[in-house]
Length: 484
Ligand code: ADP
Image 1 (tube, helix red, strand yellow):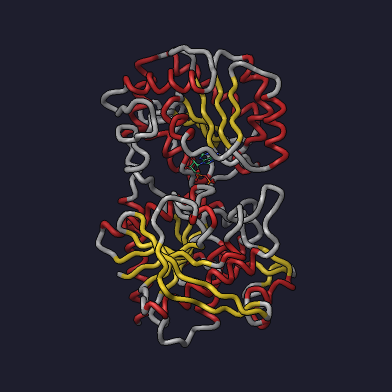
Image 2 (cartoon, rainbow, N blue to C red):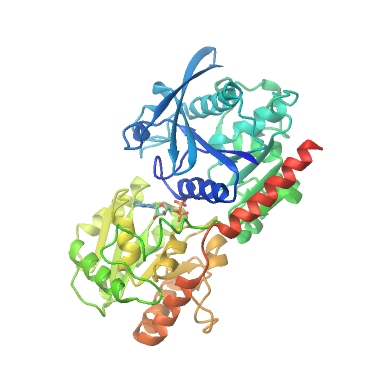
């Protein structure tokens, strides 16, 4: 099949979170299965300053939006065997951030991503690449199913192309004031309740959910959760309407990138058969972060966006308890200014057993996954979560809140001592989280028992093979339906 993946991020070219990992790994696996799969993302400044060779493809697009003509140029690079199309427009994408500075999103985001989506569709025609399936990810690519259904529904070039839309996080919906509609180039007639309108605003995610052939999200539990008022973020009714075409497919992990026996970014490699290297990684992490050396001091790691979703506020509440305990805590993350400020304040107290690292530091993340004993993820909600999958593979026992993809991947040791690979808690509270930490600390003292827990996590199949097979099946069904 010919498949185009459209997204706003792909690792390692442009990444703010797990979406980028998915958009890199899924195509790689589909390529291995014999499909012609390609990726399209914007040509951001950080892509141009990266070290992959990027060539000009001598194709341009002209998009009229908000009464102005905007020109786009096509560039091309590759991630392994997978061609990556880059949509260039310096005004829109030659900026310092993908979506905006920490203070807030760029106000012209509807314009930027409408331009991106419309250019992608133009380039497909100019290249005469007619995909069987366009797989779009999150609101930044939501305009594609909307345009294909309502504007280009009768266009012979696209009428055999099926559109799959994946929700990676329902909390980000691409909601804009109604007067931003001209920036998208969409006809005002689409501003109705059964299309794009959402309490008087434009909601691009809603539009895509209603327009795509099929919708997926990134774990089975999250797929159920988003149909309920609490987690549906206002779209539960819309999702319910499409429930027959909605499925949860758990993300995998790129096991070539995230593999403790191959990872060149860590100090010493190791595997489930030979765990000795992990001790060396722990020593090295303690040295690098200025923590007290000691093989028997349990280290708990956290890597992730510093936002309320990740339950970082619980951890902030618990910092005094962590500080008083015989353990070490390592946090790496960036995000919300208020929460980062609170972490910064705590760091200034100079507590010796807590290492707070604020920023996006790709080289430090693998060292934390490898060097820690436990990995903390007390998320309020978690569509899938890649960090716990990485932690499991690195023998770093996850302590998580039982929600979304965390519930689907972490089995609690206390509840299931034979199969448990981590520790989990249900209630979103500092005490429930602390109780799970305590259970993990007790289990850690039994060295042989602990190694068994580590190994069970390391042996879990987290590869993309199974998920890519499910997507392949879905693509085939949708493409067949299109062909009638
Ligand atoms: P989300 O997509 O919600 O941000 P995931 O757990 O799915 O969360 O994926 C997060 C990915 O981003 C992981 O690969 C994680 O290691 C990485 N990551 C997050 N924050 C940082 C950071 N500050 N520095 C380096 N890597 C990070």
